[in-house]
Image (cartoon, rainbow, N blue to C red; front, side, top):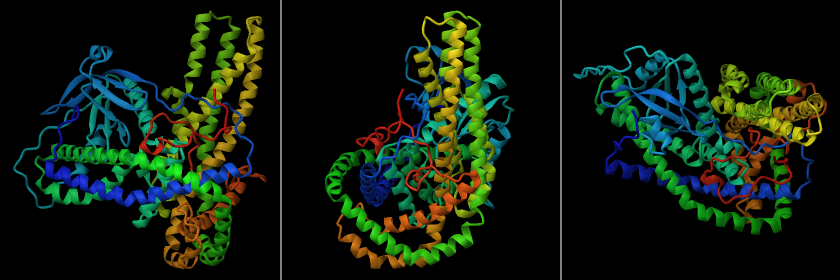
Length: 604
């Protein structure tokens, strides 16, 4: 499984998949248009509402998101029959993995033998675990006896393997020369996977928010209320994952009985087929979203013109309907929360809190060590070359996967416990949650490093000797730590607040679907009279449920934090769980939209 093979699909199959993609887009885009309208209303109301003072103390680093480029020799299992062959691998800063036959081909800028975007992959370093996955991926049907001899595949032990597994794409099998090289590649690959996965969640663009909300509403219309990891990736990748899940049962039923091969070779053949289907669906989704882009830009411009003059009237009507609707659903809603949510909310809150506290404590420790190391080198009267090297290393800390692993593993440690607590509520997005916590740690580290370097640059002059300069750095160190503690506390509350909503809101909506949704029709006339897609009775109904749930969440957070004053208001803590940062992996959902709100932070 080396470079991308030719498609295993014939023309008829490809045409069928294009029809499936067209149907998906036809059903999804109305949801997307509606959420684009809602996002414009939300944006305008935020602009016209009371302006909260900027809460961030740290400067905002412009360098995120990226991964540190990683490269070196590996061996790869490829060819027919599969054999281990030496290659030169390169992980690009945007999370793409490429491999070349020789290092010189990379250095000369030649075309790679193969490449893959790491969205949705998982890194395995256990050969037995990977073989077990292969054995369960494509089991032989009961009573089926193939005449073919199974091809030998990974029967010999591999000392330092790196298996990249994806539910709908080809598997990639690499091997490193030493345990140290294996670990370095594992951490680098995991960083690339996370970078590609959280591109939409990190985006400030209203269209990205609208896209994620549209995906959630589209799935609710199909009866799927719980959050999971389907929203990891770009907009086209998310739609592809949605459709692949829908297609998978039929693909299994129609294709597996006729699939040639035996044993693990059969599993690889199945993965190759899925990869072809995935590529065709992804190409169709990308084409469809690009075709929608001009309409989206026109729609956003038209919504801005029509909503802004009437925004006061629309918000007043929303408040009136919301109050009447809340009176109708208050009884069943309170009953649901008391019976189904209240008992577990403290446990989930405390687990999230302890996870983020441990991670941010690790970030602060790492940051302090880095600042102390710089002061120590300065006191030692180093050469200017050595000092420049130390400053560069300090500036690169947020993107050093080995250093940051001490922070990231705190989120990994809580994965199992969080999953156990959240799964009864239909939440299966633990990977997204862990990625979000790791993004938060990296962003805070990057902001703190940027702040320290700028403040140090302002106070250090050539007139200072080494001791005086070190004393100035000590003062800067204290200021940065105070700012970090302030920002990390606010970010922690926003993160927990957002993820509690992700876990409990879809569950509560599903529980009230039958008892409360039928009552919405009597309020629909008032909303339809406005004549704007930005205001819908379903959206107001969800706001009612969200508002009451937020009261519970805020109350629990106050208890957990031991705080009498919550700086996170209902509006300040948005529904978006990720601490937002700029993104350089552009998706169709982000083009041609508003930039981040001015005044939200200072950029370095």
